[in-house]
Image (cartoon, rainbow, N blue to C red):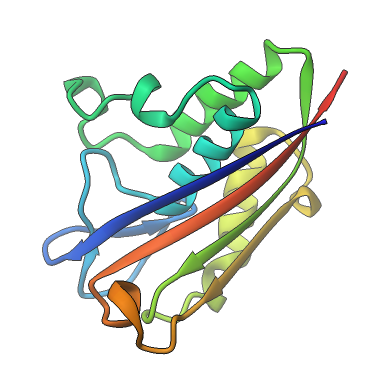
Length: 157
């Protein structure tokens, strides 16, 4: 078995869509970034790449490359999933946590799980997504940004 851990954070800004787990969430701010800035999917990709010892998303999808400007993170996730398919490992499961003060994410979590499972090509039961606040502490608690962590387990074929 191989375990990977991923973390991502983006600043909340006006004039951007808020996309988490491939779901556009109605909110007055969105996440700033070169791509769609989907922190949840970015953390997941880093965890998957980490489990394969292939570096991070910056290595594979650099923000200096115009090809990834505004990129749909689920499409990038599909490419990372292909890297697993090409390895001696199979995806077992992922457990992810989104940390933000607002908006409330509970109504969107099932759709996030579906999007991720469909992109990876696994059962929704292999995908766990949770959301929490930091009780108004730190940059996420102050509403300045959103962070996400992910842990992935791969099993050798």
